[in-house]
Length: 246
Image (cartoon, one colour):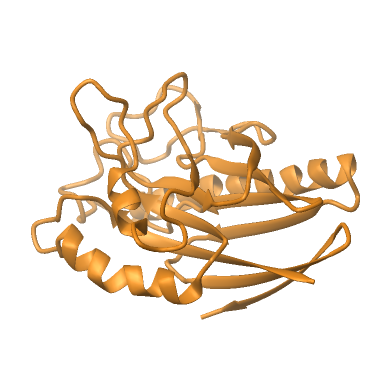
């Protein structure tokens, strides 16, 4: 019986440039690389991975690739969320799956199974003239990996944070709201985005199981940077999963 180790990491705005008071990439790699080496994951799901640019090349995951150097995921197959119609990864907060196993499929979902609800703002300045679509901010990444005789479906999603969505005319600065009712409405809108993501994951899982009732799947749904480890054991054409969270 073979064992497959899976892990997930929210890397929290992982980039090669540091914020005003943040650690450098070298500092972060020094802290994080030993954790990746210690877990020895065959499959890793990452959240909040920023993209980097080089002249004449698509925006790519250069900082993440540097982090993985010298680990068992060095040179692994990487699948990331991307700007629609482009080879560029997003500038910020990409979802990434890395593995040495063959990747046989990938899909990026954003309001595919859940139509964006319409909502008219109550507190906007100037007053909203009609309803607007409340679309999800963060796509879902569905990756299919071949693990021996088993096809494993990985669903990587980072739920919208509980921070209120901006309301036109209701922010004095980045963190200060003009009125408490606008703050409450922003929180309500964020909850709609978050629940749309969660429902879309649920419908995606149902679609996978409708096509194959014996499908093996592992979902990582997160709204907080909380590492999880999951171990899968293969026996015949079945996968048995066991996970711990800390």
